[in-house]
Image 1: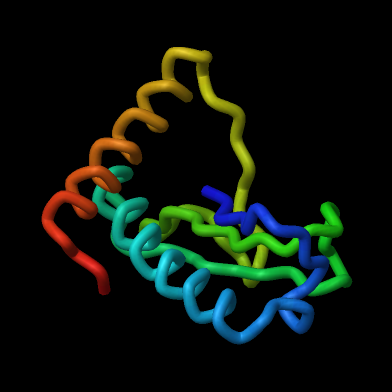
Image 2: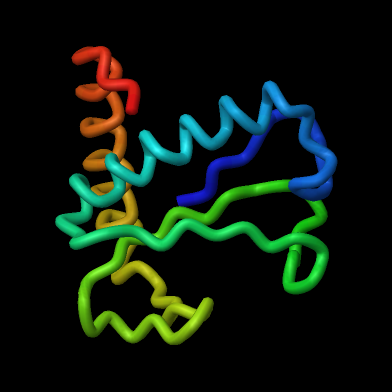
Length: 108
């Protein structure tokens, strides 16, 4: 999952403090949602700043993790979805969990 602000900022250093706070609160919430929706043991949350930043727009990666999943350092094995239906299934699971969190007022 990528968390991306609508307003353009190239790097972490460019973010206004109030937006940085809001983005990291949302990263915390989405980390929980990704873990729950994907049946993961944890998450890897990462930001590239200039170096290795393939898109010059600030964004936060939130990647589901399981022990033995192949993540080495900051590199995880990238796999394509088996089908468009499988991709939609993941999107729907994430949307369900995020919606449930919003409905319960779960904020941290």
